Length: 266
Image (cartoon, rainbow, N blue to C red):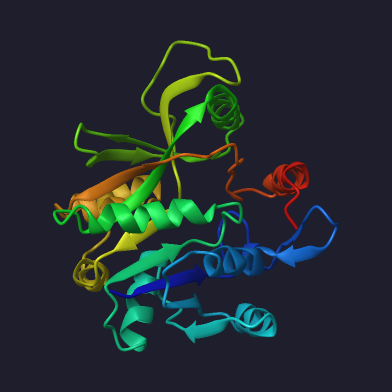
């Protein structure tokens, strides 16, 4: 019952070129690249058989090998991490029970998010893909709303039904709420955490499906599963006092470094 974690990384990001190699300073002042911090996060997850970085860029390969990561070189033609994960699983010969896509833009992802995600997928045989969701507090929600007003994408939000099957994901803030929330208040909005766990059969089929209109409009790879009638399970995770933020824009570097400083993370 083995688990493979793949960290897909590309240099030519449209919003933030070279993002995987951006340095982030920890509490001690030591700077590590985003890709290294993502790899370290993956290494801390219990019950994982293998962790690899998947890229098409020699700069990322060289940087990753320098800190000890196993690297798989993939096609430069893929448009998202799920496609890159599918090729990586094939290159490695398959055979894994679950493949986890730990996207390299969330270095503060706690290990229990991934462990709970794997447990959730194993417990839901009807689901072919699972992804974590985190209930927003008022501070996070207000940050998302401020980003959208400024024309930035602050995070992806998710809505799901009573069985936790996803109904939709969006870079807009959904569902709409007219209330204003205090920083420490719970809200009805769920932040989608950019990690995925796939069953190999669904992952292998993914690159053969054309990108649908919703995926193209939102730029969210998980919508391709939904547009092809595949169930996406939302696994609710808890922060346990840990701050979580994705690195989507250059402005996020200072936010993440500040969070790492206050949490004492090096």
